[in-house]
Length: 148
Image 1 (cartoon, helix red, strand yellow):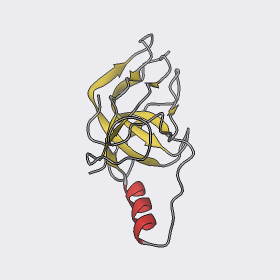
Image 2 (cartoon, rainbow, N blue to C red; image 1 turned 30 degrees about the horizontal axis):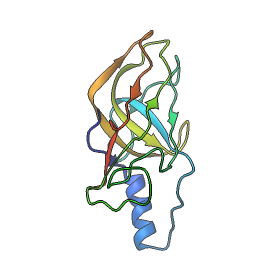
Image 3 (cartoon, rainbow, N blue to C red; image 1 turned 30 degrees about the vertical axis):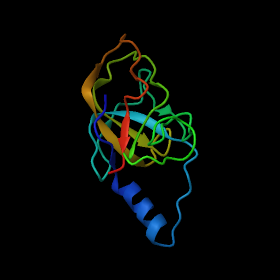
Image 4 (cartoon, one colour; image 1 turned 90 degrees about the vertical axis):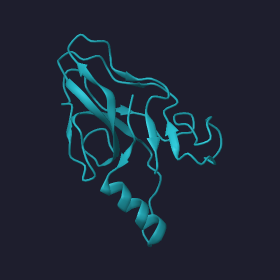
């Protein structure tokens, strides 16, 4: 369902400062997934679906039960060599009561509203979401996150 995950400059800076410099980055307590009608890029941006008509970001916190380890499975630290992870649970949005538009990308944020974008991936295929449609969801394993 999604293409390769791309980190924003915000996240790259957090990682570099944590690894190479004196700033530290604490593990986020919550992660919020949102849909975009115009894809973001490294600077962030993009156009997120408007918060109306049932749309809102979906909270899926950083837990072993929610995301796969690189070697597969949900237990223990990642030890594989693929750099890949995926969602271990369905990312379930609410049913739309208005047209949301054509969702082209999905991204993960620091907050339920506003906040900073950690990264994003294109949806393949994109999702035309209209009033009365079944609630959009990302099935287990369909959100592929790769650290290159």
